[in-house]
Length: 94
Image 1 (cartoon, rainbow, N blue to C red):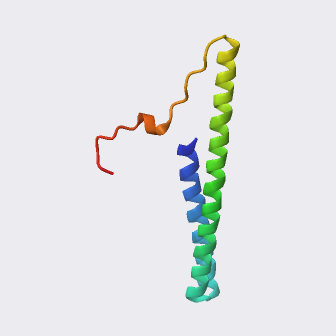
Image 2 (cartoon, helix red, strand yellow; image 1 turned 90 degrees about the vertical axis):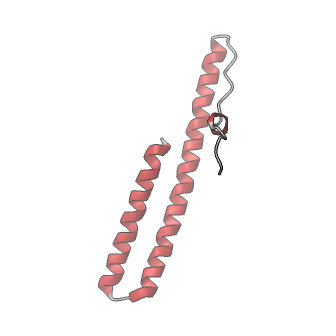
Image 3 (cartoon, helix red, strand yellow; image 1 turned 60 degrees about the vertical axis):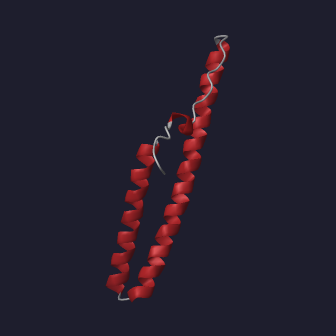
């Protein structure tokens, strides 16, 4: 899901910035308007990114709950969830 949300967010951010820049230039408002547009667009991008992260986390937790319940109904212990850091090898410098 993250693989879909990130490119979509970048696309929307780029589209909003482009539209704002074209409008500011056509109105002849200059650099101050361009800066306001850039700041506003960045704020929208930050908010959208946060909302996407919350949505992805809720989906991950809901899926884990469903899988745990299915295992419980089968009388099996639920597997321990994997974490991204557990799959990452540290054979390199950061």
